[in-house]
Image (cartoon, rainbow, N blue to C red; front, side, top):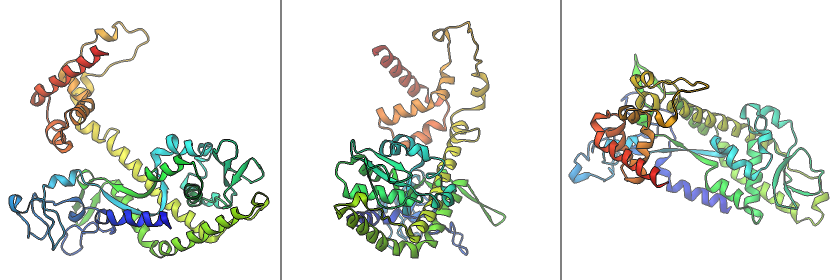
Length: 391
């Protein structure tokens, strides 16, 4: 119940940021749906210092105020470049980028199940398997086991038939076993996610061509998750009662002095149904991360389109040879080429060491040429030289 209370309090804090509608526009007005992925209430106004209804329209008089009628903040439209939204996840899911470096520190053999238990596409096969989460009596390490025969481990008496049941067992360890801080951190650090962040709308635009909406792939994945939330509203309402019952069953199991010889386990249709739904969520979350990586990298990605020009691509191309005629320190590169090649380092220096705003960097650095930022870039080069000499 304590974990449930914390989740509800967290949701109430972020209530204004949650996207709940799969619609982008209202059908008749063609204005953004205020509960959708391009909401002005959630992500900021489309027009500078003008709320949606027009009641607030002055930077001096109304700047920073939220309209009582349309609930839109009267601020600069640059908010839509830096404001994130949220999608509530009724089932905790695994952050795709954290499986190797965080989850395997908690469950030592978890990577052995990366193509089975952790793969949402294989969910139907997982339901037919018997797996258990076990804690070693010697060193408190956690592993996944195919049976409960090894008496050197204490097993959570719930059959793991998918992602939901795996995460439920981890949650039980977090709430009932002492000394498992790394398990606690999985939930606190959103490695096991209870909500998914939505990137700012300016980065994932939508267009209407011949009365048809055309938008980036990541928007499709977000919409799929919101549709899942709509279809799981009834299941979500009943789930909290069932989870409390399962927790009580496990607690009763461990109260038995002879529990290690007790072969009872929790196997219910509701758990398998939750495993199936969690697999659907995990699949679309994985797809969101794939879509975001495509937006950033590759030939059509953000970095190549905005930071590396075609001129640089061909004029600065090099060939790898077995026996180069020049040593690395003998190679000279013009600062105009370095401006593009070192753009990420340059931006890092501005943001981390000079405390420059990210939006200002986008408007005044990424979209500008070397000649326009020559003086500032030269300061960065001088700083690089000073630090390299110091080392």
